[in-house]
Length: 457
Image (cartoon, rainbow, N blue to C red; front, side):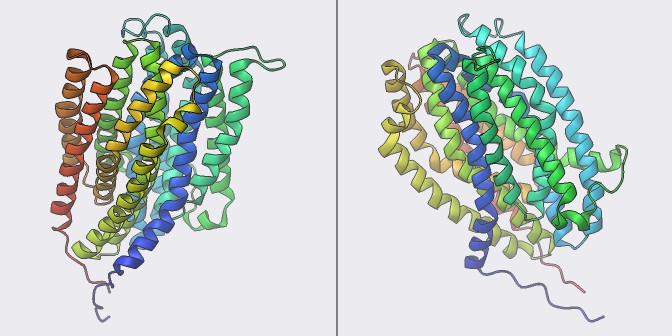
């Protein structure tokens, strides 16, 4: 059989369009996820400042350990996209079934951990008036964790084969469940007693189970996934398959946790200052997290495009083109979000609270959020491109240094040591993200240069 030349590398404009098309449903799905936090915060804020502060602390403690399994399961998209790029479709189903075992195990461990953490808020130094509500929130939301890890696994499989529409549909579907359920359980309605923060936690758990069951039904019945035989048989857990997923995924989990924990610990430290500071920070970080869903979705699409380029043997030029297409899109979107935060911060805050002291501080913090739009987007995109190359160990150490060697010491020094309060903590966030964006970008440049194109029969 004669050997053909390496496959043609897509033009840059074509790559940008492909990445944008793949990312659009992911971005919408992530925005829906971000709106879940928005819904929780708005309902909590209207219930009372104490409830908002309790949800702020409870959400922070919930997301901190969740980042490890969420990041670990991010090994699924590049693994699937490389198999898909190589045409090895029969191997996708067995890999997915092992990933489900991994997701189930991580979910069970996390359920136990959250149960322990819910009873340790006092010793963590959280303000005593916030502890009861935050504990109730965690007691409710923990029951949704096993469903959430399985949902992530199914979602990442679908993303990895370039089908991202379900991420959007199930994301907004969850939102439609949470709004009425959260309101009914927080304020009380009909047979449901008023539960405040605890009701919002329970409503979130109900939503997670419905999302997971809905996605599983979709994968089992959709013709698009029939060729992969995802649920064709029962496979016991096999370390030979789970091990490589963990070796790729665990460093991703640690990397995501390094960044996420910077935000979470910042929230917990601000929670020591009082409920006004905690509530203002919760509003600002919730808006910033909503903005982050756009580059996060673009980063996940870039992971898939880079992984697919590797699988197709496009070499350094093809992989770098996929990475830089994502970067071009991120620079455009972050420009828009930065301008929106600069011009509209006061209007945004009014949707959350009528408390003048909380609104004033939250509006000021949103100006800091505008300042880190570019570094936040660039580091997320670069990390996503590196995941597509399955380059996860070195980025883990870069993240540790950026967020905990630079961001947290400076934030804590300014915020608590010098008495700048929440504003000082946000300076630390900006500097940590800036260092990460530079180091991750340089790492992708270095790693992608090593690839050579392969010829195909």
